[in-house]
Image (cartoon, rainbow over all chains, first blue to last red; front, top):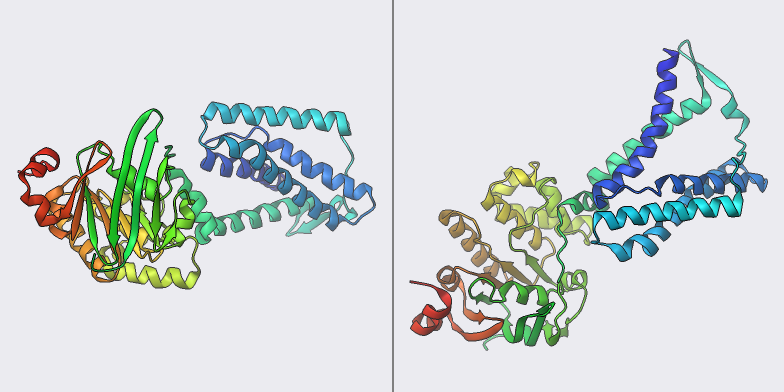
Length: 175
Length: 239
């Protein structure tokens, strides 16, 4: 049972990773190889904010903002000019972005892992119905669940979400 | 012309790479009219619509809609100005429900406008109301055509461009669709209709333009066009 909980927590993390890839793939028909680098950007943003002595919440917000900003920037600079391009072009572009970002991280920050301290709370475990769950695992499961529900709502009920789904059935018409 | 022109096209030309698709096309549509663009396959009928709606960039000419120059304006802006199109082949969103398809037709409008227009479209097309939760791809061809027209009505256009609404539909269904087009006009929507089926189109149209090789070769009322043996034989293929 303990392993089930651990599995759920780890699976949740993978699910979050996969969701990002899947949303992009379903719309763009492209596997974004730079997806992992976007997570790295968020990670470094968090680490930098914590290292600057700011509170945990500020780090989380900075991580979200940084990831979003870089994603938007990539879309504008790299992917938008290639709209309607072949799958191969998009694939190679995402590879290129991935390599460029990795090199930047290595030369500007460090090739070694950076510590990103988390609050005391995450090192503890909570007992629930006879099971001990690390609070970091519990948080992971909770965040995954909430995100899934929110995404479901987005795609079901909002104009933007329905439009994202609709994109699949629009064929490029080039004059 | 009895009423004010809603759409004026002057000297419209367009090319696909080296191929000249439209040369110097002039068109007028007055408010409340049904106007048909006729011609054989590849004559430039669809290209005319695409150039009007900004989906392709004309190389020369001017398109004026409700007194405003819309040449080269972005399609999404043109839709907001009150000009909508139902594309050839319907292009409904197969994996979205009927209601979601309609929602996309009103994507730039608020919730209240969407709900009001949805109810209006359901009143016009009761079968869509019955199938509201069904996926677009599971509808019959005629129902999909209704959905495509309904989707373009969601933006409450002053004028609707219809590209080959009879394509691939059984004759009885075509009749239903054409009855609906007339009803849309009676409700106040000006219609510009592209059709290969000239007889059918001229039955409901006030006027027609015949296009061949990217040029307007004849224009007149439906009766005039059908009365001219030369035009009928050369361009319309009506027996």
